[in-house]
Image (cartoon, rainbow, N blue to C red):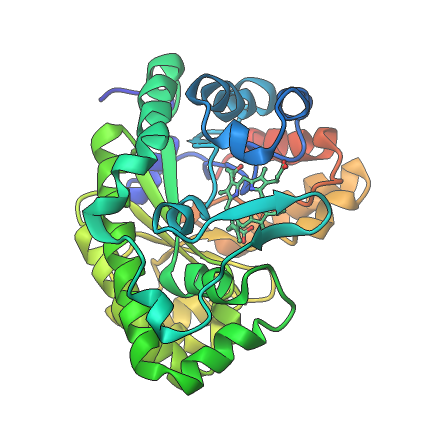
Length: 342
Ligand code: CP3
């Protein structure tokens, strides 16, 4: 497929470019006025997530208003737990809440998994097709999924948490059942992500938002083998892996197949390239809190980050944009990246 703007795909393809492409994690929700208006017009977040017409509008708004180089499909990682039968609600000021989280190993026997989850996710696939139509080749479309441990953490904990102690306790008390659940989540993610690609997503990002919660041994035992299966199953589609806070397991990512690694703001670039290779494509790393700085400081921070990464770079923040960030500051960052020439 031909695109007006191929910058992201070119970098992921190892081609040399005149400046880094930029998109912003959580660009499609949170900060833009169009999103807020649409969000206020529906009774809940989940109503929005199931409306392809509204999703396509919210997904495209950042291309039109902010001028980013890629769209990310408006959705959530938690649609997979829901499709597996572990349902959630997003509660104002609290975040995700699950009425019936997984409590005992026998709860895992009841979950739906693998390609059986696809039927109830048809609203995502319809959203992709409609969004692709409406983007009409302006930029690529990024699809995403949560990594197995991050979804496992929500399914067991039943909500967000500072410690995810229930989920971590489950790994110690029920290691076999934990592997069973990781495997079922993995099979679901593979079916889902492959279908997203079939429907038109050009890139897949895997979010392991709570990767930093586990010991190195646990990450090796309960996460890496499943992440490997997912990434291998997506061979042929550009893959971005975002293991937030997992710098301690960086050496163990060498055997994984991904085009780009997305890193938080605390992980040094040299450290990543030292472990993964001098030409590893790096996404992210700019502190999201930097966007609270005055406008002219943003220009300097952007130029410094581009110089520091020095090529093979997808410009982005180290995590999603914070909800109270001024959209003008986000735009300033984007304009500064677009004005840069290597
Ligand atoms: O990047 C984008 O703009 C696309 C949309 C997107 C959302 N969630 C929309 C959303 C993406 C990529 C996600 C991923 C997601 N969801 C992650 C991984 C990324 C990360 O931030 O670590 C996680 C952990 C979740 C789980 C989740 N969903 C939480 C913790 C919350 C509550 C609060 C919040 O804003 O993060 C949600 C709800 C949610 N997902 C909202 C949005 C815009 C806010 C709900 C609302 O507007 O009512």
